[in-house]
Structures are given as C-alpha cells and as structure tokens.
Amino acid sequence: MTFRDPLWLWGLAAIPLVVLFLVARERSRQQAARRFVSERLRSVAMPLRSARPWLLAAALALAVLALAGPSRGFITIPISDRETNRVIVLDVSNSMLADDVGASRLTAAKAIAKRLIESANGRLALVEFEAVPEVVTPLTSDSDAVAAMLDSIQAGEVGQAGSDFGAALAAALDLVEADVTTKADVVLISDGEEQGTRLRDVLRRAHDRGISVSTILVGTTQGSTIPMPAGPLQDEAGRVVTTYAHPEVLQQIAGATGGTFVMNPFPAHALDSLLAGRGGVAKQRNIRIPIDRYQWPLSLAFALLFIGSVVNRGAE
Image 1 (cartoon, helix red, strand yellow):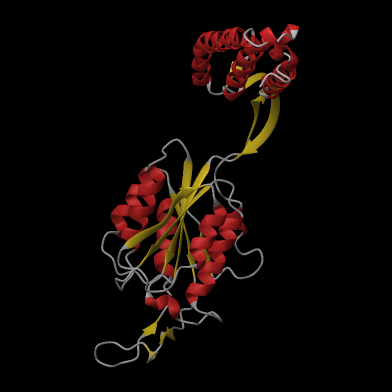
Image 2: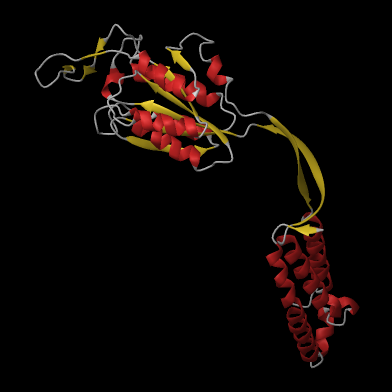
C-alpha cells in the first residue's frame, strides 16, 4: 500500500485526542441522563450507545487515510512518444504583407505554420521577429495554445521595422538550449529579406550544437509592392517599395545547419519532408500507474458514520 500524499497521515496522530474528547463527552451525557428518569425514553440506555465515540473516531481515521490517497497495485499502459522540441520562427516584417502568392505572404506563412503545429508530436515554441525577436510562446506541449497565438499575429506588431534573421535564430536557440537532453530543431518561415549582421555567428552556434534550421520561403522573386492602408509602401524619397523574395539566403541557412529548404510549399505534400523529419526517434515504453484505493477507506468511513447515527437514535 502506498500513498499519493502521505503528509495527510500525520492527521492520524490527532485521533487519540478525538477519542478522549468523544468518550468524555459521552460520559458527561450519561451522567446528566441519570438525573432524569424520562431520559430512558430517549434511548440513552441503548446498549450500543457507548460505542458511538469509537465509531466516530474510526470514521475520522478512515477519512484521513482516504485524503492521503492510498493506492495498491499497478496498471501497465504502453505509450509511444517522440522526445523532440521544435521552434517555429515567423517573419512579421512589413514585407510579409506583399500579396504575390495569392494572399499576403504572412497569411500563407501562418497557414504553413499551422500545418507544422498540427503535425507536431513533441513540444513547440513560437517566435516572431522584425528587427528584434519576440517569444510568443515558450516550449509547450499545448499545441492548441500555440495555434491560437499564431492566429493573433499581425504584420509589424513587434514595432521595429526590418528583418534580423540572426537575432531571431539566436532567440530560438536560447529556447531549445534550455533543454539540452531533448533533440530539437528550428523552422524559419520568411521571404528571405535579411537585414541583420550576426547571422553567420548564429549559424555557427547552431551547427556546433547539432541544431538544424530548416527554412521555408514564402514569396516570389518577381517582386511585389507592399499594400498599406494609405496605399503601397513608399521609401523616404517617395518611391514605391518593391519587395523580392530571396531564396538564396534561406538556402544558405538550411545548408549551413543540415536543415531542409522548401519554397512556397502550398501543394498537399510539399511539406512532407518537414512533417516527417522531426529527428526524434519514436520510443515505445511502458508506464506503471498506481491504482487508487481511496474508495475503500472512504466507504468504510461513511458506513461507520451511518452506524454511529443509528446507535445515537433519539439521544440528541
């Protein structure tokens, strides 16, 4: 017999005091009853009446045992899991508003990210970035929460224009390195416009730690304007800005870390290499779950309380 919360067992130390109190209270009641002949009519002379303090004390002791969570025996359940972590890094710079893929690049990127989330077997984290990164969700097994946060992401919400891949990947590496015992990878989704200065150092860091960075390009090399509420985005000279996708940058990132590069993976199976390539090996293991037995002492406690109520009939 084992207990889930054995600290409750210290409550059994108070049972002797409870017995003394109940016995003394019963004797006091009997002494008062002897002064009145009519008290016999109220069942004070019932033979089992004197056992009531012991019944109540035993019921209380059994209730304490039930609170301690007794268990006896085990049930064995086979489970299969993959010990992997994945960080999805999403570009939310203004260039992701370009609609050269039939919708905005960001809308398409979020749809791709959602497919990655839905297929995940391990923990996930989500990082958005412009010139600086922002952790949207840390590593978590709650994929529904990650998907909900993904839906709320908007372009430009970080508030610092630009796209710094190095800073974004550094934030992702910080997340996966917090759990060095679990294999991890990073997936970067962007149009490839890189404006940072530290990408090479971060790629070396990822390579040295065996963390692959896969990249997904969203956008076309033909270029597109960036729609804004007041019209196409313009530079300081008043010229309309045209944004171009840069597959070579994302190919470089994937190649330097042993990751996979995918361009506009809109067809049904275009993402299969990433959905199936989590790197973690499926492990079959059996877990033993103790079988709760709190029902036993709890049922006995209720039975003793009922018996105590019966033997006390008419005495109150």
